[in-house]
Amino acid sequence: MHCGAPEIAAPDFMGFDEKARSCYFKKQPSTPEEYEQAMQAVRVACCDNIHYSTDDPAVLEQINRIIEESKRKPWWKFW
Image 1 (cartoon, one colour):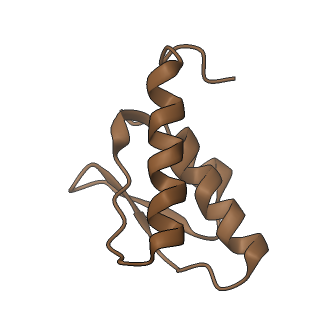
Image 2: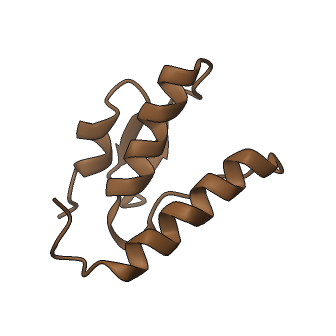
Image 3: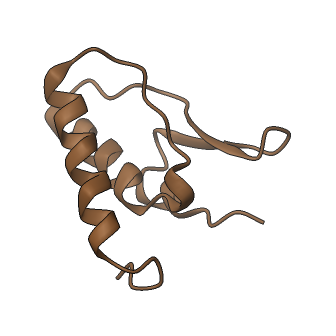
């Protein structure tokens, strides 16, 4: 069973592959609002299960910030 949180946070962008048991982006964000919705999906994802291939320094910096923030908070205090 998976948490489903990324799909709830960003339903237009996130999907879940039952066979691979992994979240995935089904659409890339193209506006600042869409980008923020996608980052929210990264924030709520369990087990660091969302991966993003990029060399965009701004995106990588934000993802790294989200990862560092999540390390400071116990996994069971996600609200």
